[in-house]
Image 1 (cartoon, one colour):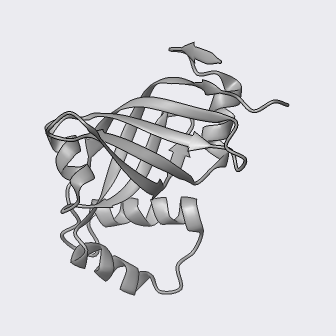
Image 2 (tube, one colour; image 1 turned 120 degrees about the vertical axis):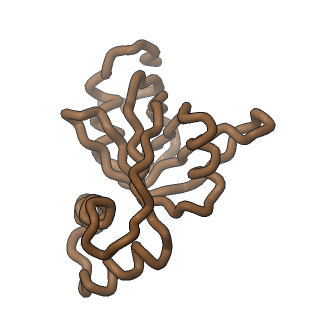
Length: 147
């Protein structure tokens, strides 16, 4: 099992290849709060990006305590990677053409490809009070898939 501050190639590959993971934040009482999320990993910047809404527990938890963990597993569940990270939250989308909406579009494209109606998508991001969670990966550990 890899357990170090470096970025083990096999663990990075697992993080890069998947698009769904589990975000763990810290509740006010210290217990973990877990959420299944879609994500995109930016290799060079070592950042995991997730679209979230402003009124959910994960946003509140991360504003109070930016420490987070992010878990990704193989389809069979036997190999996994956990990223210890520090969260950064963009401003909440306020206008269909603001920087947050532009980043949400970039993130959508990275995870799902093209949207059939970007105008509708832009309006929904403002209406839903969405923002981008950026998880700055500090350390990876886990059990790399066998090759």
